[in-house]
Amino acid sequence: NNPQEVRIMAGLEISNVIPIDPRFVSVAHADPGSVRDSFGFACGHAEPSEKGVVSVIDVVLEWLPKELGKGRRAIVDYLNAEEIILELCKARKVNNLTFDQFDSQGFIQSLWRNGVPTKKLHFASGNQFAMYENLRLKINQGLVKIPNHETLVEELKSLQINSSGTRVDHPHNKDSSILGRGKISKDLADCVAVVVWHISKQERVFTRDTSAHFNPDMSGSAQALFNSRYQSKIDWRFR
Image 1 (tube, rainbow, N blue to C red):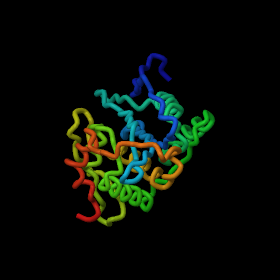
Image 2: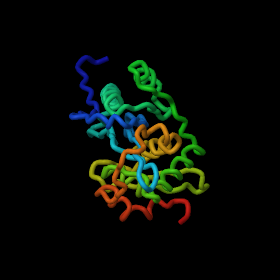
Image 3: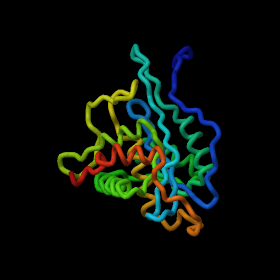
Image 4: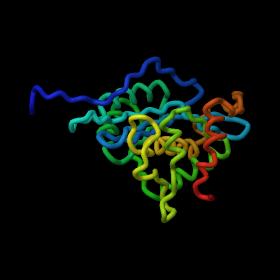
């Protein structure tokens, strides 16, 4: 080891973490990446509406590795990611946090020791297609609210089915329209698809006061933008 070596890590800083309404609990999913792929994280909860149970994605975070030039690269700071995820899980009352199976065992063990129900999720082709099909249907039914997150929206717009019709993927070797991002991926889209899947499978446990009134109008800026401009792009299977 070179004691003079300087290593640059890609981390995040958050402030003013808002606790979730005590009537709700949340679910979350993380997809670790460090050198080439981003580290994605999404958290959401369910809210009743006249249309049905709405999956509200209220946290989307990305740790993005950066090319620094001259063969140097800022990799994702895993300690920073763990600290932030732990803080968010406590504030948002996460009762089910899953991780992609790659590079996740350390996170799972550490967060579990800190009281966060955490486990590994096998994102195999069969599961993956079912999760994305569920996401597509829920979005087209107006039962998903997402933040107006530029990278997430681009990933959702770019999704495509592979030639065998068994897996949803991102376009290969297509540059992102977002400055400094490189190629389009689907790290955040994967996280959102899993969170909506969790909510869809356990809708009853996410709302403790189903008599509470919530405005069913889904015309908020992010949702209206997604529905009006991108809904046709999410109809992968039946085009």
